[in-house]
Amino acid sequence: MLLALVVLVVGVLALVGSSALVSRMIGQGREATRASQAAAGRLEWLRQLARSSSPPCTDPQFGSGDSVSSGVNLRWVVPAAGAVRQVVLAVEYRIPRGMAHDTLLAVL
Image (cartoon, rainbow, N blue to C red):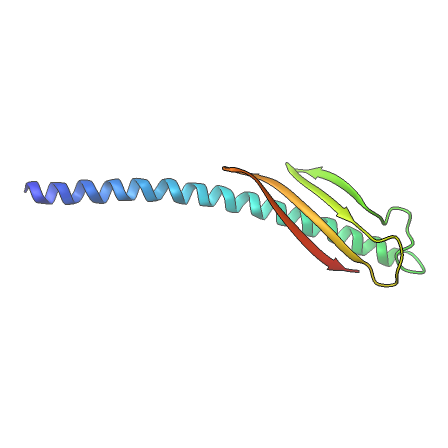
């Protein structure tokens, strides 16, 4: 009986430890999803601006900038000239252990 109780206690402790890890991973995944949605939205906005003018990419709003959306910091750099522009989008968002940084590259 004592041996069965020890095995049960060890199993419960392992379950508690892994549930804390899973909770952190879910929180980090939620923040990464929010950051990726904000970045995708910003790139789509830039694509629409690029297509909205004739010739393409001449809209006055189409350029480098930064913004904060839902706790996600976005900074993008758009080259000043060229028929094809390589946009660099830096994304910064909070995770349980601090800040996470990602960089996206798109060609418009």
